[in-house]
Image: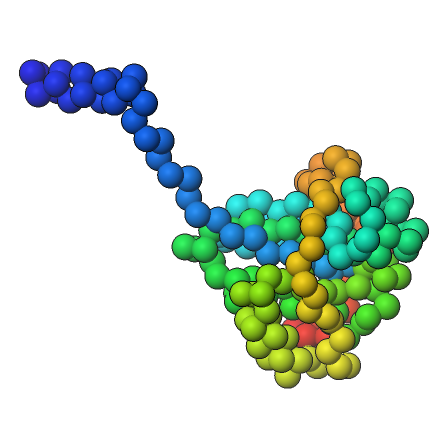
Length: 196
């Protein structure tokens, strides 16, 4: 009992004297564009080791763009997702492998029923991520069942989170999301591009 009391007293003393806080777990991020960010957010969020997926905009010249700015095609931005993940459980190379299976990289005019520059597939990379992304893109090009690789690898720029009503759309509006996904032909086209 004395030993337990001594341990508790020592723990309490550390708390009140400002003992250093436990370090937060290390995380990394990756930014992907692949058409509708609702679908990308939904699909990337289901990967073990992914901690958070945010819908947003990147790649353009307008600061703090709105959805209207992006879909007007005047901002230069893509609909994209920022994926925060635990590198102890998941590496960037595996995220890229999964990304390719979620997009039609042969279509540089948009994705599925969403047309226009803001819906094109692209990887936004840091200098350290670029060689991994280039290797992954080359490997994915060999696995295509139809078409040729057109998805771009672009330098990472500022990521602007989307408006609140776009976030977690598939979770909050499951019926509408599922109708959109089927109606847009996303899964059917992915089977043509990748097989299976």
